[in-house]
Length: 338
Image (cartoon, rainbow, N blue to C red; front, side, top):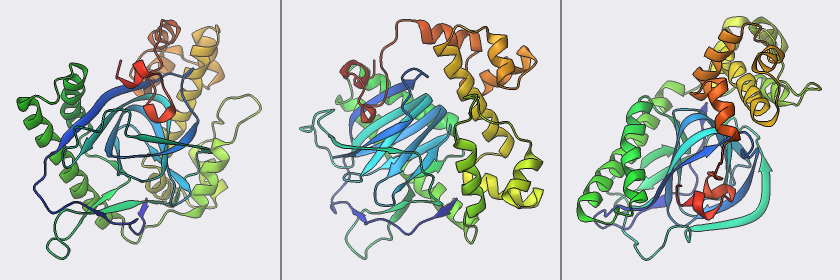
């Protein structure tokens, strides 16, 4: 996906960094609690959101559209940036922090909610920010995308999960914890800047084809059966008016996924909702979503969600907390990370 001109520059005070962790938690969005719309808000600190599994999307207020956050994607949200977060079925790790310690700003008092809801509307580019960390003219700024598909998602998870555990124990202000937090946050921001630089070089001159965006709108439209359509790749290329090779390349540039993986993820998301919201047999749901072989369906379901269909249904029927991100208006217990 192409990279847009930067939004307003972010300028840090020219003094030594003192990173401060305000909040770190895991949010799980199950089908019955997933939000397919987003409430606009802004925050008073910085936030990193790492999508562990499933998909979400983030709305960019200044640009009037959304950017998808697939598994392995990281969203970077600065203070004052108007945005909305929609938690589709899946899980993410959210980390709120300051570059310069502000211990007086309590967790959950850093959120300012608006009244407007928005629906997914993919942008043809990924907004970016220019982070100035010194005096004007001293050092070039760090460019960081609103969303970055990171190269080592397992490493990101291993780095961020200790911050969640520290916050759960309310041990994040202890001296030894602050050393770990400072190292982790600085690594995260540096890595996002490095990956953005690499992706900018790779994507230069490769804007998203508007025919792909129009096709994505068609695929996201509800069907009479309530099940995502299942066209073949050749059919999709024909509908977009493109050759097969050009279509594959343009589709992956626009979505970060192959056409086959994108279509499968949409079908599995729909099947997951049916598992949670109905008592239909698993093989019936599988067949309705184009999987005549229940074992093939189970493998595909686990590949996308991380759980088997049976385990997913059992978890969705248990005693669940609302673990949505605080941006989506979850309960205080959920906002505390469970």
